[in-house]
Length: 507
Image (cartoon, rainbow, N blue to C red; front, side, top):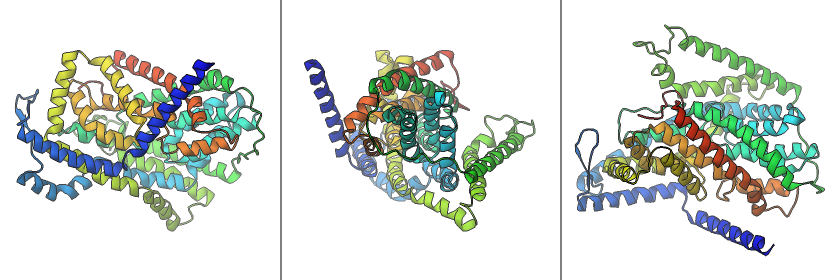
């Protein structure tokens, strides 16, 4: 008993330190501004010491370009706006958010998630909650704001422990963040950052938003199965019987009008899929490559962001018209504008992140670090599966202190993507490994932006529930999902399967 108390105290101290360190980190935008300045001074030092590397492809000598020299300062002054406007994630995300704004603002996501969970048989309710959590990644906040309290309320209504329902939903929404059955809003963000980083080695390489889709789809199935098993076999038995007297939270049923809206959204989606299929399935399809006739390197995948936009916009519009949340063009634009208004923080972050990334590229520091880092990893023998597993664990550790996936990847991608490319790994593999690590520790870090909200949901059922309650409940998910997901990645690599369209494992 004494040992258990001591270990509990140690664990709480570790969590306290994580929270202290995380809280002391500057705003992500400030962090990127600082990193850009650090890169500038690092280029000055690198120039002083005449740091060089030999390019493994053509044998040319790579020298550091000093950002604080006359040429460097002129480059900075004339390229600040260019860096911002041409940073791939900016346009990708803003475009996709037009479609997501309509689907979310019209109420489609809300109704879809509730319908999915409420219609599931009681025996399948846990799986349905985890499934809905994974699917909620299509929206920006629906999973956290709607599904997590809904999961707890449904479990409570069924006479089961509400914390188990909350945990299952939290598992799908946050622990399975890197998985999905469809391409979501985070995919173009990560792909854009990966492309910018990959251009350090290969200026012509393109990374599309669906580059991890096959792996993420199978990962989503794994999350649903594993999340359901962990909830019902480990988490819920530990919680035992709920004896609280919380005020019952009403679970709002799907209205007839919402059912009608979902029906028309489904019909519009089917029509849209048929129309898109007609552009790529026939040999002379409109969106096939007009010269070679292939699908992979074609206008369809070159314009996949437009396809994602339409994929969300059309069903969202159909739903909104059916339920009268979109009565005219003003309502339609209102939803888009509201969605865009939430992107202010992201736009500011991207401005500074773009400067950091392009400073890094211009200075050649990224290329030199990648070449030397790749050589070091080869010399110590850390390649292949052990390298990728180590990278997953590093990403998971960093995620404890820094919540934003895009902010983390903007820092990590310029270093690891080129380095792994020089070892022969395609950026799609590096990105997939990052997504695993970026997901699994979301459940146990107080730095996750919605963590306080999760605690508030739990306290509706017991005022004594706090950060420690949530973390202790979610640790089994973090540990086991990390193990299962790494095993899946290893199997994927051993089988040599592509990670997605134009997403091979190796260059």
